[in-house]
Every structure is written in structure tokens, then in C-alpha cells.
Amino acid sequence: MQRVSGLLSWTLSRVLWLSGLSEPGAARQPRIMEEKALEVYDLIRTIRDPEKPNTLEELEVVSESCVEVQEINEEEYLVTIRFTPTVPHCSLATLIGLCLRVKLQRCLPFKHKLEIYISEGTHSTEEDINKQINDKERVAAAMENPNLREIVEQCVLEPD
Image (cartoon, rainbow, N blue to C red; front, side):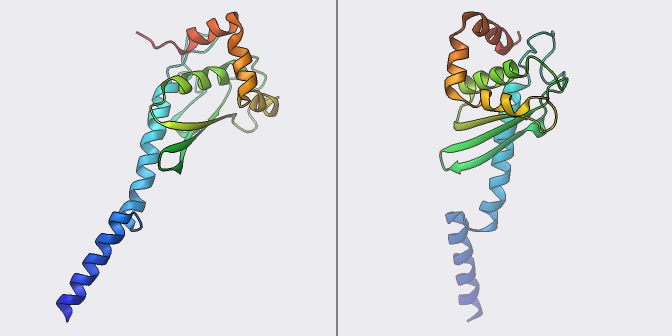
């Protein structure tokens, strides 16, 4: 009887594990999200600041902790980025958000929805800027401007 009980217990735990309902599957989920967040961070950290010769990482505008990835379903993820402008009245915060969006739309290897925000309390007009950089029509219109597009291209260009 003990042998049957042990076999039944092993079989049940194996079925739960294979179906993703047991602890090993649950424990794997955060690791996958962390890996995806690092993948996102590796893409955005090299974006150049529009007016300085530094990257967003060097200026501490972005960091590993500013990227969050959540699973929407098996094939799609929600990527949320909260960046911190260098000063509360940064006139280029919208442009930085645009650069983040363009780089990720081009380079992310997995299906995603993207939300980009200024970290709460770090900019004087964060609410307005958050609306602009998450509005598809405004982003498309901005990228139609040849001068703006050229600046974005220079910022997202990979370093040699």
C-alpha cells in the first residue's frame, strides 16, 4: 500500500509539474520575467542622451530596476519602463521616451505591449509627457518629422 501511495504521489506531482501548476513551474516564471527584463535593459542602456555624449545608463536615466516584464499570455508580454530624467525640468524627456519606444519596437525579439513612464515625482510635467510617449498617433506623427527622426536615429544607433 505504501508503494502504491508513493507511486501515486510521484505521478500526481509529475502531472502538476508538466501542466505548470506545481512549484517548479511557478518558480520558473519569475526567472523568465527577470531574463526578459534584462534583455530589455540591455537594449535601452546604450541609447545615447540627445544632448550629452553619454548613454542613458551612464546618466542613470535608466537602470535594471526601471524595467518590468509581465506575461500577458503565452506569446505576449507587457514591458513597462520607468525612466528618470536628469533634472525635473528636462526639456528632452519626451524625446528620451520616444527613443526608448523606437529602440524597443525595432529590437525586442518577442511579442510585446510597451508602456513607458517617467518615474513618479521626477519631472515637473510627467503626466503630460507620459500621455505623449504612450500615444501611438503622437509617436507616429513625431517620427514623420525628419529632424526629430534624425535625432532619434542618432540616439538609438548602436555604439561600435
